[in-house]
Length: 117
Length: 118
Image 1 (cartoon, each protein chain N blue to C red):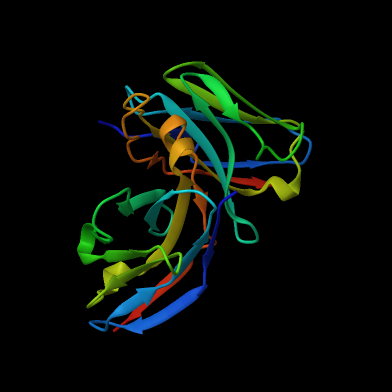
Image 2: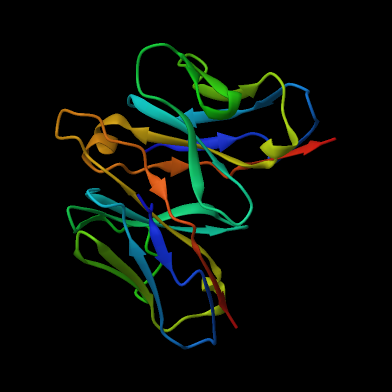
């Protein structure tokens, strides 16, 4: 079975500073990895995903994440954040076979990013 | 495309009442997911359907919860009787399979139904 740990429940940061949101996963099989963002009172929106290929994945809004198999991590980064990036961010994992058959995702507990002026 | 549509957006009910949440997936998507989000437990998958058939309902908390998908464009999640601990935001999401050897598309989430059971 897969599991996801988001190491920080809250990350406060000043505008234009870089940020890294950490995500570690546990799985005995090959996985797909995802980052979703949830703005207040909205549903989740996909930021980026790693399915295969390059371990550095670029997503929307200037975010990127790097898949590190040896460290079982998929940390999310942005070199310069904006006030509008304030939201909750969820890391998710799926067994590759299960994902292609039915699409089940296991989500982490979320990290609340708060960007201050 | 209108995206995933959920109704109602907000529901306040009293303990013991029946609650029905509705979801219309994106047209053409063949998988549908129901999630529950709470402060304590985060985002939990309750059940998901593939081609209208329930595939995994291991996340359904107890017999008070039931979900149906009578056709490709509609699903319901019912709680009967409801209890205060069911208060949460319930999300529906849908995605599309590109075939046995193909890759699955992203899950698209609806705006959620905020349920409060008094």
